[in-house]
Length: 443
Image 1 (cartoon, rainbow, N blue to C red):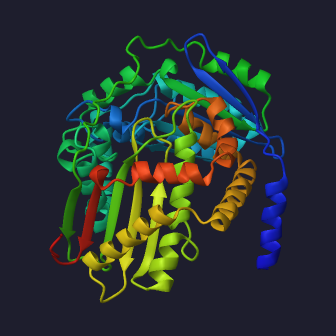
Image 2 (cartoon, rainbow, N blue to C red):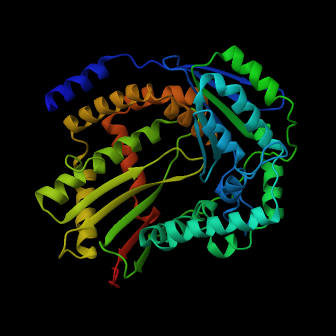
């Protein structure tokens, strides 16, 4: 079984990395449109991405981007509250929405011949949203309950909030996407409409259409349904407060009696993917996988879970898809009887050894092959492709950057990885956090 899987990966790695068939155009009102053709199944995906996320919220109104996402399902003059999703379901499709730090997105997946109806409905709520005071009161309670369930009742989520706030002292990435509870409680109908009217406009959006579609027909439909919507004169280039240079390591310890398994997390400020300059982000992608991408073969796992067992779990993570500076992180969950201080010291020793010894050539070659195979597999997921393009285009990248990414990954060398490691793994740019069920003294 393993031999067959390895053979398949090697076969895929030998295939050429072809780009998907993508067409782009921009309407007169500023709406950017991307069409991804995949005619293997009679299905279409529509995604509308707004270049507005939690990091763009007015000061003191944290959570308003996510709150408006909920309110967008409350109806228009043409559609009653809930009718949007009911209509999608009646067509045999599904829909949803999500908010991040850099964007808010809405999507529907339906039979391809239902795409005109989806465009009509999405264009309608781009400009004709309605909400009553009762709608706002009800939905505000919904997001507060969501915070209670997903954050306030979960020590790990609370810990993550505190670490993010420590990581970003001035930049709004330090504010949680869902919002701070005391600010969420004060969000009003006027706040929601003000945010909607300013930012929900065609010249602040990217329309992604993927699946069994014809680009010429998509253009015709986009002109028909989205074309009449006027652009907003309030849209200006996004400008966020800059993070000042970090001069010293930051540390925090959080104790919560609900914690079943203590752990240590360290995150470092790290470069994001930038248009035309994705090489460093690609090297950091390799670094995360080499250090902690596998629970059996990565550097941290081999050293701390097998060779000299001090941990039950180790990991490293990095996501460069971010408009502004991102983070690179390390995680260690110690074995019973191993203190957090001992676990952190052991993790530091492994990282220091990696910085001295460099990348194992065999491990690097395996990872390059695996990443190539992953990119080939990804071409078969039309929903994933739509998501990749939408997230990239609302995070400062271009269509060309998305299509170049597989090649950029393949061009990374071990020297690139080590240069990125030495730049990023600097304790002066880090936040180290301990989460435990009882107070432990941090060094």
